[in-house]
Length: 261
Image (cartoon, rainbow, N blue to C red):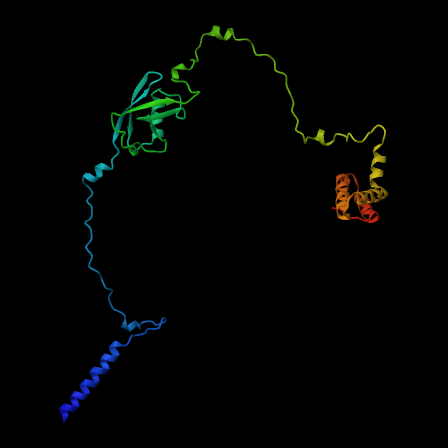
């Protein structure tokens, strides 16, 4: 009887265990493990480390820049020179050595060719795999530059050459003035005859509000829209506003019945 009860208990516990084991465990998103449940020591993964490189070896010698002995030929001038350069030097540095060898007047006038391909100034010598010690570079000079520095006339030229040079002639002095100079700004208006009309009469007529009333009526009659007439009137008013005083401007606005900037 006790054996049967034990078997029932075992079967019940086994069935309960299987049900609990098959059920998914749901952990909330904001769940945080307790500090007491954390491991006391971190888990270390056994990963083999690489050997520390030694200070001496064949690898250090490969980093040392090599010295290349190059031959630069100027085919047009039938000149050549042997130039030594480091593999870590730039092509621009190589061109400076070409200038020092008196094959070119300047760096900018040079074009170095390796098997027909132009070398770039910002590239290193070692960037060109086909360029090695004993290599030959072709030098081309750009247009306008002398083929060799020797073609430049020497400074100690014969004195009789300067005696045959005609003296420089006197060049007339020409004074240039800009269009917005003071003389241009103060020039009289050609539309106004200053001999027949005095300046005071001219300004008095422009300051008369009756002139602007007549002009407003004329422009409103010519244009189909009053807005266009008002715009044209303001354009005329702004063109002569600088010759009017503030009181005259205010009186014209009030009596003529329009506003302008």
